[in-house]
Length: 221
Image: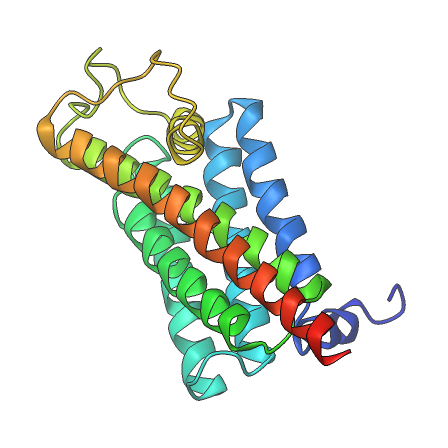
């Protein structure tokens, strides 16, 4: 690993290492607690690039590796340039790209989980990854709406910072609903409702799939 870190990274990416992806997801969410907008935005970009790279190299994505890496590199560069020029408080392309990548990753990982005949630790890690990425994708969507509407997403009128968006998204996804942050417009309330429903539906479907797989494995044994 220390002699050739690039070869080690490629080796990790070439496997279905959902434990690595789960670690990246947790780190992305954890870094938002620092309250530093630039660090939160940068960690999200780097984390999603590595997550998508894992999906590409493990042949999970049904596309050409060369084309997928080219598109990913272009999106990453565009996001980094906008982040450097406009800053984390005014970036709009970045949140849109992060949201799109997150949606693709969630769909791809979910497909892999459902295609596995029997549940295992990989399926559990993959399910957790998809769940965290749902929250991260909605957070990016809320940031994008707030930027387009010039800070009109929250009822308080304050600008929705990246760390606040991540906090609000996961509070909504888990249906905690503390009430300290609330959307102002009906469109925002609709999206919040959809995220809460998505979180509950995903848990129900994922748990049902894992339980059904465990019952099948016991019956076969």
